[in-house]
Image 1 (tube, rainbow, N blue to C red):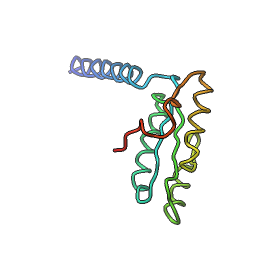
Image 2 (cartoon, rainbow, N blue to C red):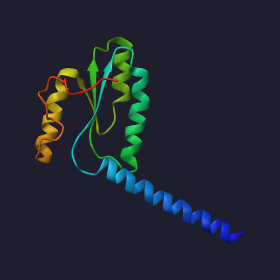
Image 3 (tube, rainbow, N blue to C red):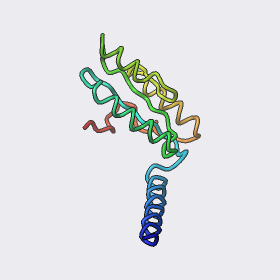
Length: 128
C-alpha cells in the first residue's frame, strides 16, 4: 500500500519537474516581450478568460512580461467592463494607437529589439 503511494508521489514530482522545465524552455524568463490583446467591439467576453490565464501564469512565476490590452473601439458598457477587468497590477489598458509606444519602451528597457521589431504597421502580426 505505502509503496503505491510512494510511487504515485514520485511520479507526481517528476511530472511537476517536467512541467516547470517545459514552461522555462517555452516561455523563458526575463527575455522581454509583452502579451498584447487588442479588444475590439464585442470581444470583452474573451478578455476575462485571457486575463485570468495570464495572471495565473504570472502568479506561478512562468511569465513576468507586462500585459497590454488595447482599446480597439470599445464604447459604453464594454469600455467600462474592460477598464474594470484591467484594473490590476501589471496590466496596461490603453488606446490601440499607444500599443506600439509601450512595446518600444519595453524594448529599450531590456536593451534590445524585443517586441518592437517590424515596421510598426502590424502587417507582421496575424489575427486569429
